[in-house]
Image 1: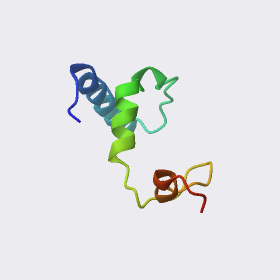
Image 2 (image 1 turned 90 degrees about the horizontal axis):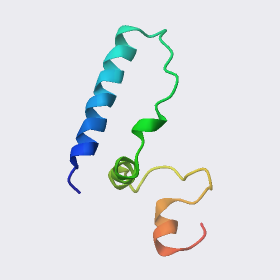
Image 3 (image 1 turned 90 degrees about the vertical axis):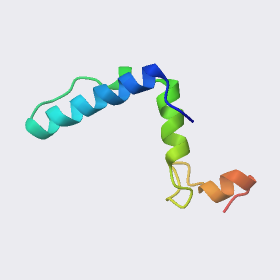
Length: 70
C-alpha cells in the first residue's frame, strides 16, 4: 500500500518529533493524536507481524483471521 502525500507529511513530522525527543529527552509533548490519521493507522496495522502477541482483547492474529477463539 503506497503512502499518500499526507502520509509522507505525517512520516516527516514523526521524524522531526523523534529527532527532538532524542535531543531533549525531558521535553514533554502535549499531544500527538493529530498525526494519527486513518491511512497512517491502516499502514501500521498492515505492517504488523502476524506472529506477534495478542492484543488487549486476548485474541491472536491467527485466531482473528479464522474467527476462532484460542
